Image: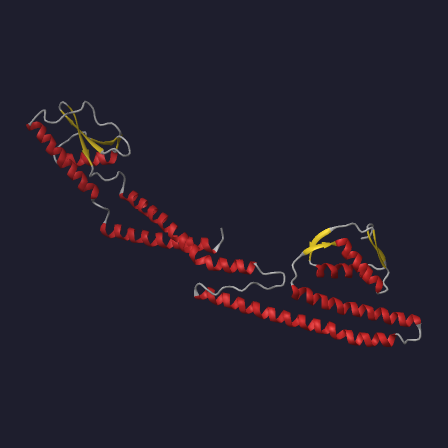
Length: 329
């Protein structure tokens, strides 16, 4: 996922694990690997030596087994213990085993009459010290991932809020006012967007007022020109003048309806489409346009009356003369 949240989380995880890993490697290099394994083997060898001495001095005090302890044999620890015992003068084929994950480690020591089982809890985990380092870094990585995801979500939450707000921009190009809260950068961004939205709204309202004023102002000269056209002696020329004036008047009315439609922001309503088309046809017919509505079927829709009225009126006027209804496009 190529998102800011994932990038921040990955960056934090890499930074934390890298720093911890580097410090751990430096400590291993300066101090060397832990000596816990050697100390534990020395202690176990001392215990074996003491118990063997006790058995020689007081036979029968310790219960012996017929075979070594069952379970998984830890070869590396077994070889290390044998080497320590050999260095102490005891060449014994001892074994270190565990019968189950939760069972204790058992040191099996051969004696003359059987095997001596010695439970021990001081043995280190098998394997080289780097195994412990890998486990340590794994735990650090898991913890860092949880912290990084939490921090990334907290950091990008205001940005997600801004993204949702911008996505809610309406058809008019305006968006709801954003709350100016959160970090300083987010507050500054919200303030800038609110200021931009306010300027756009004022600009659009100014343009709408200009269009409405122009539509209203056109009516007075159109009326004077209509009166003068009535006195044109030639009937054909007078008809052309009146048709042009009707078209100008329709343009002015469309501009005014557009302003009402945009500023009113009327919600969609249930409209009988056949009745609306019939009303438009009747209105245009009164304006001496050759328009007739035929075979209008009753249909109910949800729409904005102003927008639908203007669209149908423009469509009918563009396709005149025609009979508008079934069978006509």
